[in-house]
Length: 187
Image 1 (tube, rainbow, N blue to C red):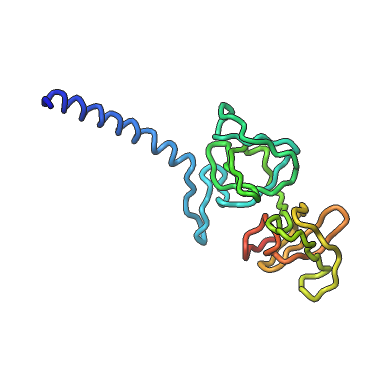
Image 2: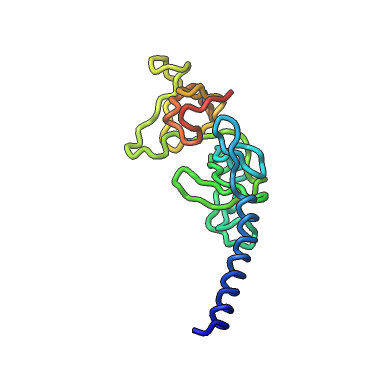
C-alpha cells in the first residue's frame, strides 16, 4: 500500500468518526435521562421521572417505529385509559411499553398523567382478583375483577392500592396491578 493511499484512507476514517461524533451528542442529550433525586432518572424534555406510568388519552393512538411522523405506524391502541410505561423521551415523543411488552413512540400530547392499571394481565388461570372495602386481606369484599380489567388508581401505600371503575371501588394488593411499581407510594 502506498503512503498516499494510506493517508487518504486515514483521512476518510477520521472524517467518518468526526461525523459520528458530531451526531452522537445530539442523540444523547435529546434522549438520555439524567440522574435526579433519590436515584431517579429524569427525562430531558419533561423533567419527570423515566421510567414512569401514564395512560392513553384517546381511544385511537398511533404508535410509531421511531420518534417522528415520518416513521411508519407499528400498531394502534384503541382503548382510552390503557396504562403504558414511558421508558424514553426524544423531543415531544415518548417511547412507551405496554403490559405485553410491545414498544413504540407516541406523541406526548396523546398521553395523560392519570394513573390507571390492569388487573393481573399476566394471569394464566383467569381467576378473579378480590377487591376489598378497606386495605387488608381479611376485609370484606366489594368486588372481584377478572384479569385485564382496567381500573383507575387513586392511591397506593406500597402494599395496597385504592382503585375504582364502573360499578366498583375498593382496595387491591399492589402486586396484582400492572401500572404501578412495586413499593410505589402516591395519593
